[in-house]
Length: 129
Image (cartoon, one colour):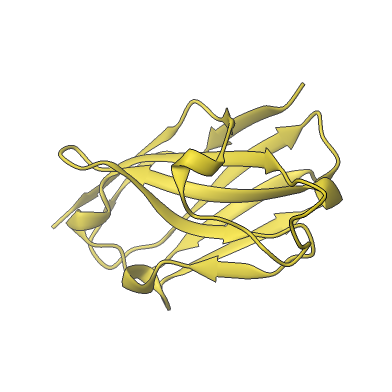
């Protein structure tokens, strides 16, 4: 059974950085793609970044250059590094995972929430000006 547990919640000032972690277990990484999402106080769930089974990454244009997604297969942890934080980054951050079908290339991943069926409980990030 897939289990995802986020950590790294915090309150930071604008310009600061955070690294979020998602402890992932119960699946074989080469068969899955994963992603980070966030949901602001008055917005829907937005896909920030995803990582494919072969390690290929994809980022939302709005955050390109400020975020980095990585997967440590030894520690079984998915990370999201966010730099130069602004109040607009405030929200709940979720990690998600989905087993890829036999027809899905190992280099492909998704940032659409509809493509995921396993979610963590979320971790709160608050950025003050």
